Image 1: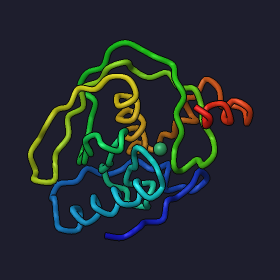
Image 2: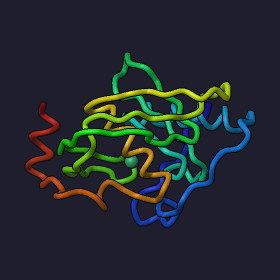
Image 3: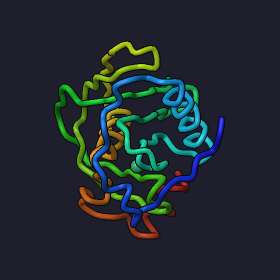
Image 4: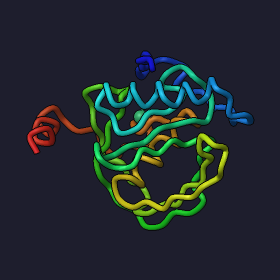
Length: 161
Ligand code: NI
């Protein structure tokens, strides 16, 4: 596995719309492994293709160290409900957090590494992570949607929790 360079805000790659993946090649499988390693090493809970310079519809999400790893190929939100405002950050916007309104509950449909279509229904922080990563595939950053960005003092409080 390899650690990939994470692009940061200002890089135009983060603003592109990604192409669908038609064939799950060995290269795609290696990319999933590398993205997971990169996410773990960067202490992130999600990572999307454009963040590592790959303009394809692919993302990994793992919101808890012992929780499930979601490998998402061509993910889309097929249903959503509710709404909740909470903070989020992004490996491409280091050191910052913002308050973003997201659905409370979403169902995501995606293809797994074996080429099998699956659905996962998530609530709360996991639902937020899915929405955040899928936005990346359309060139959208959370900062575009944030009702406000946290101040340095607010970030300090957050990091003490
Ligand atoms: Ni992000």
